[in-house]
Amino acid sequence: MLDLRGTKNDEKLLRLGYIAEVPKDTVLKECARLCGAWFIDEQTRNEHFEKRHLKQSLPIGEQEVADSQRDEMLEQLAPVYMDRTKASIENRGF
Image 1 (tube, rainbow, N blue to C red):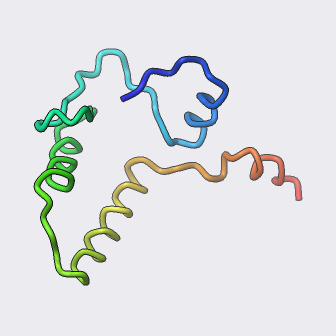
Image 2 (cartoon, helix red, strand yellow):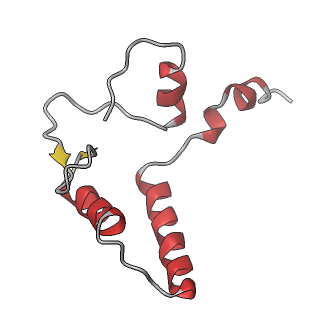
């Protein structure tokens, strides 16, 4: 969680999808280990806890599959909008 302070990169971070505004009435969930991470829902918090704090290790092949599945899920839930970069917007006419 971070507070925007009106710096020059705030607009870029929002436009590209690296960050998103959280509605004011959202009740944030803190990591159970109090590592400083905050989440907009319990599912995301629980996934963070399992991955970062339980340190489950999988065999290499299974870890690659799990990482790929996680990446696909994140792309669906929180896509990064590379088509909104300054360069891609400027080059649309070409």
